[in-house]
Image (cartoon, rainbow, N blue to C red; front, side):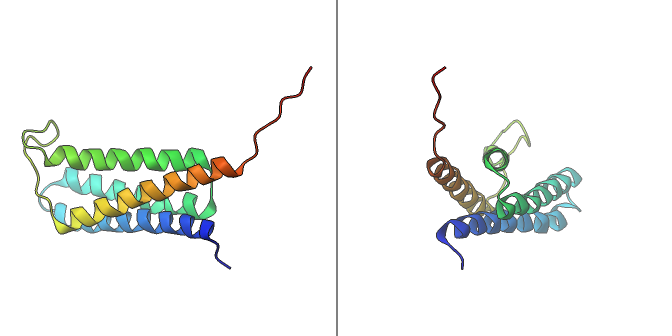
Length: 132
């Protein structure tokens, strides 16, 4: 039986997995015009697909925090590259439907994973210190 807690893990895994697949789709679009973008999308996509594993296998808060941090960095890079005269591309990039979908799944991953971390923190009893 699938519990609500398991659904959170599966939901986070699905969100990061879909974002990874969308990044991998962008590789084919970028490979002819900008090899650096293609490599970036390839690495980001593979990392996000890998991150399905820590979520489904419940590897723990450290892994979840690393996943959130990496995803926040990806979102930050996307936001920065949309700004005109930005330090990465020197021009503002377009906002496509694919980009919006990718960002939505990444934000959903962050939110769901943050909920997982909060629920795990509440669910564990605090250690009792013994008097010496």
